[in-house]
Image (cartoon, rainbow, N blue to C red; front, side, top):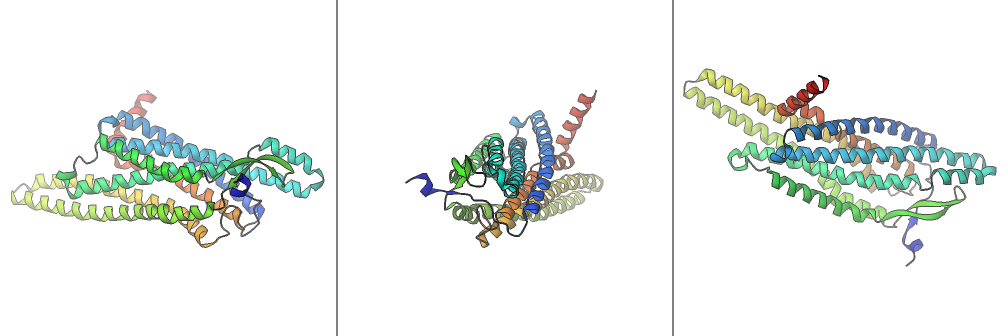
Length: 366
């Protein structure tokens, strides 16, 4: 079967819900915000990696997990920066395409100009970047959930699961998460590509995005069977872990307090209880903050894919393609934010991380 029979070239988007001006303005605005967040993420995750290495990450499973999580977040920020560039190019290309309509008499000149400037359709770069980004975002979600569950088990059964996160297990779990993410996304990415085709919009030939006729159907199935259960499941798991940890920590604290009082060591018990409560409170607050950030940053993704599932025209080549592209970019912006702010959580709630980071800053400034 020939390629032309297997694939569908994405046509010029039909205006719907938002005008072309609103589309261009949205891309420029989101791109500006995304660029700032990407720079923040590149800096913060580089600092995270350097700090966790200084904490001898390869000797401790928990620290190693945080290190791998930071590497995944750093990769996500790099890919997000590429998506930001492609979104800017899409906006610029759209402006030039408007000139073709306004200045129809010089279409050959503008067509050749666009062909030279955008030899590969920017939308293709954006789509590839989007799916690559989801690989790392998927790993981040799984690792975050893995850490929450492991900590919860340590609180529930401290003697049995005290050393549940070992270096060997961390490498194994991370490898499984990576293979799973690649296994889900890479075949899906083969359903789209770029081929040298004639573009009637510019009256010239260039590499244009094509998608398989079943691209959107498979995307919806992927969302229903994988993305949605993972996103919702991760959120539910984080919430359940928080509730369980609070319950068990309170019970353990009360038990130790009663036992200490019975032995007539009231002063020592008070100090022990205060120290324990402070440490445990940090763990719970950290999980609550991580859960809140995840929920906020994950909401646009859920709404976007839910809309794409309900409305057939809300996809590539559909009636609402412009708004769909803007929505996809918005989900990337929020996901990038989720991968960029972890350093603040670590700094506030991880005493060792804070100490080493402050020490490195002091050494660097002296």
